[in-house]
Length: 367
Image 1 (cartoon, rainbow, N blue to C red):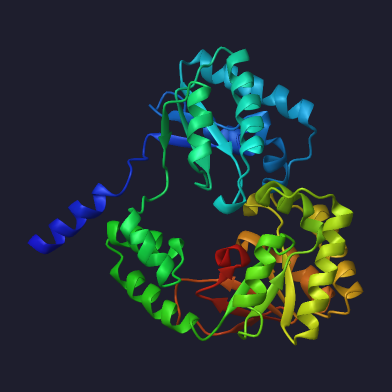
Image 2: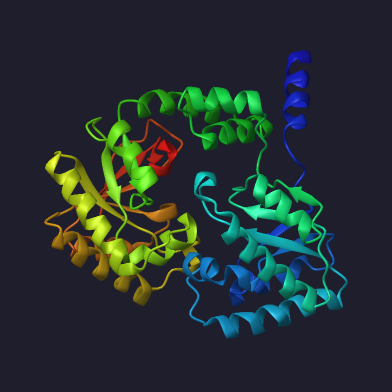
């Protein structure tokens, strides 16, 4: 009992309080806004996305509006929060990978974000970085614009542990899951996580999303090619997603050409290539037309590279029954999804085989 108390006391030292902080990145969506309004007056501090991240919101939350309409809706919702004296601070997205961050890009994002909030009479002192990706430039730029406090709404990993994680090639999400399940006393899940980690060493699955970046490609050729990975490849249908997440300095045509060359290389090396499509971050934001467009463009591209994938993975593991129908129509025989339980067996539904991944990598884990 004493050991348990000490363990949780130590863990709580490394976990930032987040119950009263709210990341309102999907506030533009009407159905999300209706839910969020129920939290007004409940003592939350709102961290609000701004037009500086319009493209991020558009492609992550499947928005059907242009930037002008995005701005007007956001103004209306922030004014509503101000009416009830809610505390408002800044949420900003800078990318998915720290190594890809660019100082000028960050400067532009912060400048536009702060200008927008100041126009509405808000002078934020605190901010969060969505996906928790920032560097020393981020801090100096934030200070320049009057921001004093960076909050980490995710579980915090101390530097010595982070170095060990990198050395052992463990994913930070693995450690986050250990912390979360310890905090909730889900010891069965912790057992599952360790078994899955061992099992995942034999089943190597890679989601390739930033593969067009030259700095990453060289590492992939060295550390992944020829190592028995199954590649789930992004296609130009997710160009905007990739541009937003990985700070790409190229247009869609160049993206397609580079991707084609790299797929040809992987094919010549005998790599096992299948399909990866990002739709939206939340299942309730899926719609049929959007999925049809993404599938059609992805399939046309991958077939043009003489690849006939039979396996499919949805970005963020977000899909629905209509996704399954489309996958079946395009000849896929297997859909992979994530589960913490390493003992789940393959199942079949509506003619599609469902396999369960317990450990997987992104290509940018090898940067």
